[in-house]
Amino acid sequence: MKNTLKLSLIVILIFFSFQFPITTTAEETTKGISLTELVIQVMPEYTTPDNWSEEGPAVLYGQHGLFVNETDEAYDGKLSVRIPLDDPTLNLALVGQVIEEGTLDVEYTINEDTQTVEWTPNEPLEPGEEYRYAVEYYFAPFGTGKSKAFTFKETIDKDVPNMSVLFFEPVEAENVKLSEEPNDVLDMYGTPVHEYNVADVKAGDTFELDISYEKESEITTLEALEQHAPDDDIHQGLAATDDNDGAGTFISNESAIMISISIVIAGLFVYLGLRNRQKAPTKGTNKSQQINKSSKNTEKEKKKLRKQLIDGQIDEGTYKKRISEIN
Image 1 (cartoon, rainbow, N blue to C red):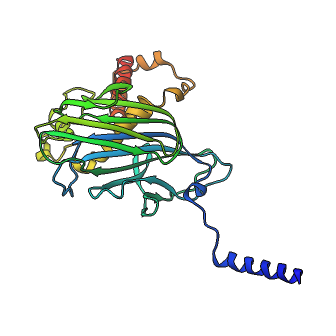
Image 2 (cartoon, one colour; image 1 turned 60 degrees about the vertical axis):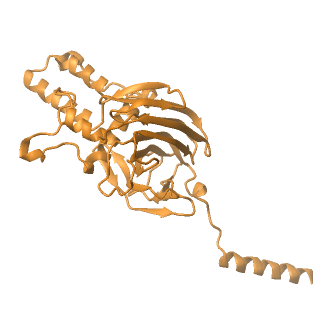
Image 3 (cartoon, helix red, strand yellow; image 1 turned 90 degrees about the horizontal axis):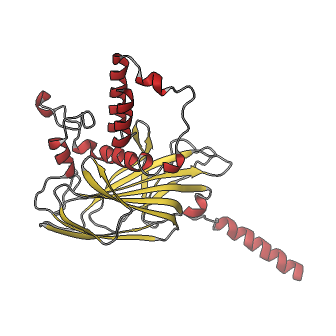
C-alpha cells in the first residue's frame, strides 16, 4: 500500500513538472554577466527631439555601461536596463551597442512586468568579452517658465563597482542649485558638468539629486554649440557653416544623441572613468620620432586627433597635450 502511494505521488509530480515548467528570473538568466562600469548623464534643455509634444523643455537622460561575461561559457541571452515606463512623458530615443565607430542600434522589446528594455546582443558574448551599451531617452519633469526645478531619482537595478552621475548645466542657466556637492566640476565644450562618483553600488541603491535653476531663453545647449563654437582647432567641425545654406552643419537634432554619447565617452571612459585602466604604451613608440615628423605627416596627425576629439575618443585635455607634442 505504501509503495503504491509513493509511486502515485512520483507520477503526479512528474506530470505537473511538465505542465508547469520551471522559470528563471532575469537575474538568474544573466548570472555571470556583470555590470562593471556605469555612467548616467542628466542634460536639461540639451536639445529638443523632432517629435517632442510636451509643453515643457526636454531633459536628455543617458545611461552608458559596460557588461562583462565573467563565466567560462559563451552567453547568448538577453541584457536589460530599467527605464521609467510609468512616466507619461518618456520618449525612448536610443538602445544600442557602443563601438569605436559610434553605436549600433539593436532590436529591443519593452518588458512591462520588470519595467525594463531588453535586447539580445548580435553575437554571443565570449568568456571575458566586454559589451558597451547606451540607452537614452527624453522626459519632461517641469513646465514652461523661467524657474525650473525637479528631483532626479535613479534606483540602480544591478550591482556595479563604480558609477558616475554627470549633470550638465543648461546653457545660459543662472542660479543653478544642487542638493548634493559634486566630487568635481568639469568643463566640456564650455558646459559646466557636475560629477558624482559612487563606489560599490548595490542593486536597489538609490541616487537622488534635487536640481533647480533659472533660464529665460529657449535656446538649447546644442543650438548654442552650433552658433558659438570657438574658431579653433579643438572645435573645428562643431560650428554651422555657410556652405550649401547650412547643409554642412555638423550638429543637428538627428545627430544630437551621437554627440551626447561622444561627450560621455570622452568625459568618463577616457577623461574620468578609466584612470585605473590606462593602456600600456605601444611597443616601439618613440615620441621623439613623432615630434620630428615632416610637416605633411604632422598635419595628418592633427586631423586624426581632431577626428578623435569629435568622435569622443579623447578629451580636450588629451587633445591639447598631443598637439603640443607634435608641434
